[in-house]
Amino acid sequence: TVRVGQYRLADLASRSGLHAEAERHARAAYASAQRAVATDPANAMFQRDLAGTAMLVGDALLRAGRSREALPFFVEAERVLAALVQRDPQNATAREERLSAVTRLADARAAMGDLRAGLEAYVKVQPRFEERLRDDPENVDARANLGSALASMGDLRQRLGDTSGALAL
Picture 1 (spheres, one colour):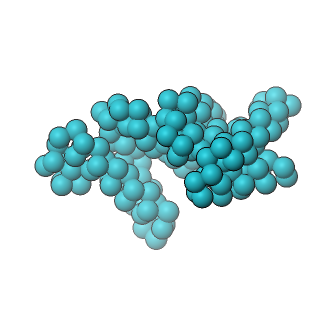
Picture 2 (cartoon, rainbow, N blue to C red):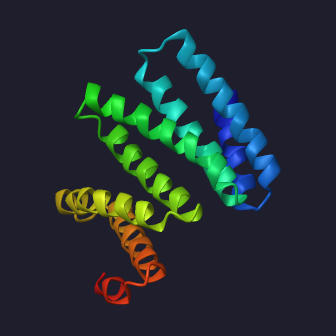
């Protein structure tokens, strides 16, 4: 679909440092997802697409150094995914994507200078990452996500002046 193509182009442009192009494609994918949700608001797949494209716009803005503009997109993604998880607690994909939205919120808050809020968000999701790894010790993504979260927590603690806490992680 057009949305998938825009999503991939935005991701590629963002990773390549082409921030304006990444934002343009991400916003096009997001607008397409919004239109899809408007046609069928109860459709979980459309809701997940909306959350994913909101995170994509947020990622493009965050990589461009525009964290304040990125924050509302991450907030929307987390809100949409929280509603999906509440509706269907067994939806592992929505639970996983919600954790991703929370970590992006943490990154945006830290980039805006609110290091404590960023750290608190990571502290909240750490047990969920650990739980996923206990449930599936061979899950490479779970291991990578936990490692990334711990590294970010250590960095934030260090920036807050808590070097002993940073080293303890």
